[in-house]
Length: 342
Image 1: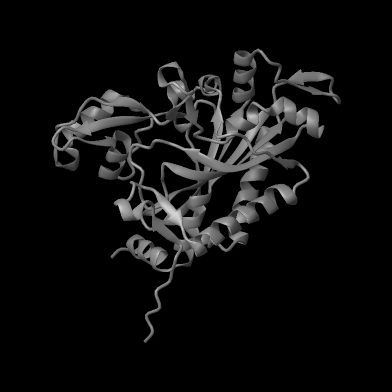
Image 2: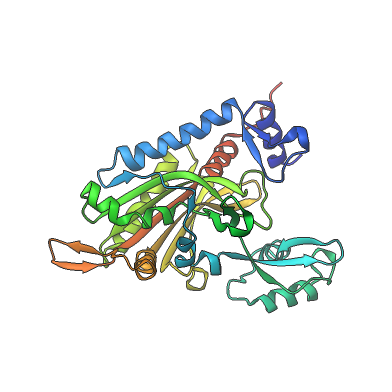
């Protein structure tokens, strides 16, 4: 067994993690957390809350709904652009993320600027997974859709949130009024999110249901780089102080072509998982994209009036976003040791 397989086996034997719905054959990438696993998850969240909320004068806490008005996801561009490149192997009718297939076939390859057609041609030409029989690549939206209403044909589509951030942005005005916070300040949230991933895997590294711990830090335009560096260093120190070994961590700055549509700067803290360094924690400078979009679509004023400068503006946002399960897995890997003494 490789290291990851050993950790999976040990996690089940010791009551950390069980396969979900196991007595009915399971559900792909669904996990339940046993006694020790539940305690570890709670301790992770408590540690994050202590450092990001309780010990920070800047930050407050919010708990927003999982189900939001569909207009939220339309305004945030999730309905249009929250998608993965999907292709199907016509030999066995299995579906895959095209970008992940290519990256696994040729480690280190940079395909961030590739079109769907370029990805498809690569799969065919290089006979990825031993075949050239691939369908054309299409965007696959990762939002989980359900319906609200008693009668299905009259019901409205609603979506399970894919991130906690939008619940913070749409409550920006209420938060200002009730807390009387002044820029700069942050809003923290921990909650379940759902993504209909094409190829989730690597145990609990990527699952369809997981918990996010997010901070949306609002600051004055022009100061975002200073706060970006502050929170990036804060994140790194948080991990090291919890016992993550420095040799298991590295930083990756996103190239311009790798940036999300809302970001002008992003850095990932990578952890050395059994398959190599991969994203553990990301921090993004989201500019004023979210507040401005919700301001324009909702027709509600989401600007901030600065009493000191007598100016009104859309705050810029710095977002450190961390998955509880990824940090959970990092702890298991970080502390896994085989005693070879007899």
